[in-house]
Image 1 (cartoon, protein in one colour):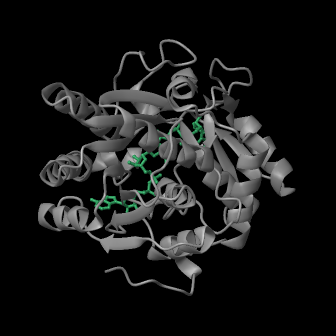
Image 2 (tube, rainbow, N blue to C red):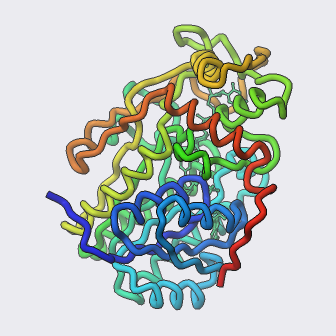
Length: 352
Ligand code: NAD
Ligand code: WQD
């Protein structure tokens, strides 16, 4: 039986972001002490104000950049953490094609700095945010962790390089405890409607776009292609509720503490839903019509992608519990309560 030692401290890079903020809530709920290290390049301090409100507990916030080794090492040391969950990174596929060096610098160099800081502080337990994007175009479905790895854009390549780097690190020093979590398509929000996904500008991902159409911020959803080899011709993905994903991180950090290893795990539901099924499910959850227009395929898209999630069940005792209605209802509650995301929020917490 895996348990949390009361007050065990976790250092969370990128903890103010979409997945990080939900994970902080679950970490606090599970009895961990949390220090967030974030440069707020794609998030708002307000998210962390709300995390603390939801959990009814406080956390530490350090405003800093991963690539600043001195500040990072100091923050990690001061936190007293025994484990790191590493979310910080840039994630926009299109931007990574336009600015590859920014992505290699932020994601890869940033992770090198983090591993150096961890080694200096003798903290050797790490949970890393990888992505199903490392499977490239799937050769088999559902996708097991043993599927060959490849990447077609700089964002995906940074995830692959980091995964390889972590495997090399473990090879050189088998006292590390490393969990590589490959997320499928995170969606939804905390059931309170207080925290959720807050994309800047036009959303790249399907569900936030659908939610903005339902609330009236955008006119219609562009459905990128309906001529794929899928049941209704639109792309099929494994959408996973962000709270399920967050709970997976708590289980991973608990499990990793037990044994030195370097293991990659899929975090997905194992179910695939099409773009049209997502639009219909969102209409049902919101009781709003969601207009759409079918356009051409989006460059780089694949027909179908869904996880074989059994290894996470076996090793972590974790499986996704929340279904498609909850994903859409919770995304809608967040969207309704925060039609402009965190931007309009009044309270601001000063990070130190
Ligand atoms: P997000 O952009 O909401 O959160 C990332 C956080 O990292 C932000 O708060 C940002 O300010 C911070 N950050 C970025 N670069 C930093 C740096 N150099 N120093 C300090 N802080 C920095 O993204 P998210 O959706 O929460 O994703 C978290 C992680 O999961 C990322 O690594 C992402 O690549 C990965 N991932 C996300 C998805 C997805 O669809 N959301 C899917 C698979 C993997
Ligand atoms: C889902 C489906 C689109 C938007 C991306 C990244 C991946 C990972 C998760 C980080 C596809 C269709 C979308 C729209 C549409 N992120 N779609 N109209 O492409 O599976 O994965 O986010 O690691 O790396 O590539 O997610 O939400 O963009 O698309 O028709 O306006 O919705 O074609 O079939 P994707 P998505």
